[in-house]
Image (spheres, rainbow, N blue to C red):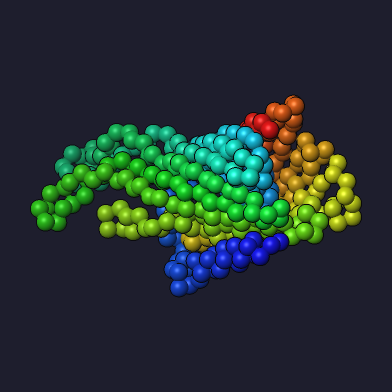
Length: 341
């Protein structure tokens, strides 16, 4: 590893430590908004319990560690769907293209579909029926949440990569009526927030077997505000390590057992640990399992994947199952990708 790469790695680590320090104000729990930014769209990552910071290596790396996006040249286009809790859908699209000696550029979109929701307000009139119900139904409305991002990643050396993402995030909670204290009248307020956010990441291959270390910082942004309530985006710092443990004894690659570990420091919760395992047969079939520690609902995960080449064109499919407590039961994720060398 050359001196420039070492300086960049140390600088990134110092920034992450500073942002996660008590002085930076990220020790407050339950203070993050736009939680959809925390949902992992990648079927491979989700099947391994989210432990992918040191394993991300395609266009979907933009959602976990953008440094991993730069490991491949050529085109990589992926679409994902997550069947989230309460019949909520989470969709993501990512596309990247790597240019030799220049780096890899990528774009991504995330969109949440909550379906129709009912707008209700407390009722204080004299209608006996509505008084018994206690509220008035004002009809259906929809919540709009999405993020659009652009990423860049580059291999600084054969062992060290860096990457970053800038994204535009919008949340539209429709309108509401609030009391204007100066006039005593109710006024209609459009509850829309537009924010810019940034992700950063590094990936370092140590040179011993295929052991690698990844670091990422996601959703770094200014505060948002609804009326008089301020909130932060779900800033998360993660340090991860991964390797094919079979490489300790043999250089053959027909069989791989990847073991990955992530230590995560989110703004709105205590530290969390993600542990993942992946068995890979002939670089084509993958079987995965993982566990998320220190979560209220999430825990055990499973997944499978198929990665097949047809000349210069490749097809990748991943599915993940995640347990989600006694009430919500389970979450399903699928991702599909096409690659071209």
